[in-house]
Image (cartoon, rainbow over all chains, first blue to last red):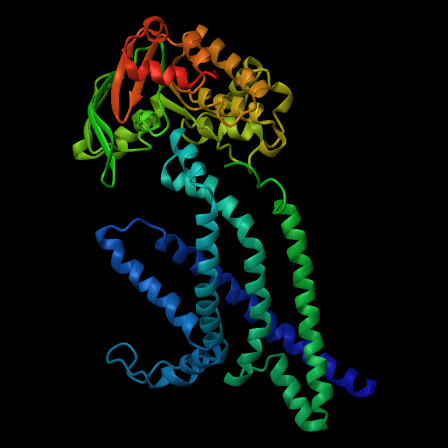
Length: 235
Length: 245
């Protein structure tokens, strides 16, 4: 058994560092930027022009939260090549599998995380806005200097949750031909007829990755003072 | 600073009914009245945290007509001239005491950090909190936190400091240390507008008393005749309700 593991593990790890880790990191990075942007748009006041944009972002969040991630991956990778737009993409939109993965995972993460960030911003007491306004700060300054730093602390635990989910969700990329860890374990299992061992092995590798991330989350939280420093400003 | 024929409503409820008030420089105006009478709304209107629907706000040469709304320039001017102190302090929890005080001067007045820190230290010395300069808000008592909030406001050098029930969240012994600071500021000639339920403090610090009830100004004048031998039934009723019998 150890012989089989020692043969398979390096291959799985290689796929992990080559595809799973980059896919997760890049998607999470773009996802968070998109989420922050979406959250800020959705928190703006309702005035004429913004209503349309707000509706669009609301639709985006609804769409990605209401459909399965696997289906989204299939639409972007297998479906878009059939979307033929005259002038722009007459032969359909054909994306590299990795790019398709990054786009889908980013959009999906962005939709979920935007709700987390929106809630975190809303959770900062109104008195904080008022205190900043009363010393003459503009809305933009207040958001950047006073509200977002506090919202960030609140949103670290739920965002870490999204991050850890994303690590595991990237296993779905196997279905759009990306040779990440799960795909590799499937291939090896097909060769050596050890599905139980191979899938358990890849599960263990995912678990190790996620454990490291949880540990990092704890470190980040204590550094940002998530548990302390946050009480009693608005009683 | 003056309010002219100012009205404000929340939904169908009229909280300020066409009020006229002036606030003199170097003087302390104290707003008193029952809860929900509109005194906090008056105070918040002076800082433009609330925008009344109609009436005018006069500030030096600036005239803000509330029916036309408030533009960014007017907003910046008024916020520069007035500073607000809240009942619940609203200190920034992610900044130290020093960080709270220099935030406005460095970000809004664009003062260099060194000057801002020097000013902050002077103010902290004045209110007796030099030793807390590097502490965070959660490490302060309520009285200390409110004094830091006053310092944060002072650091912006406003002409008027507006205080919205500054001691209502405090225990009596902590209330005293805040009131002491306010009395000192009043003696130094700092213009202030204070909303308070503490009548003995009001009597001691006020140059002018304004009694507000149901969005109307019932009394606007010297403190002495307000507290002694007042013939107005509503005021005597209010005053007697503030004292334990």
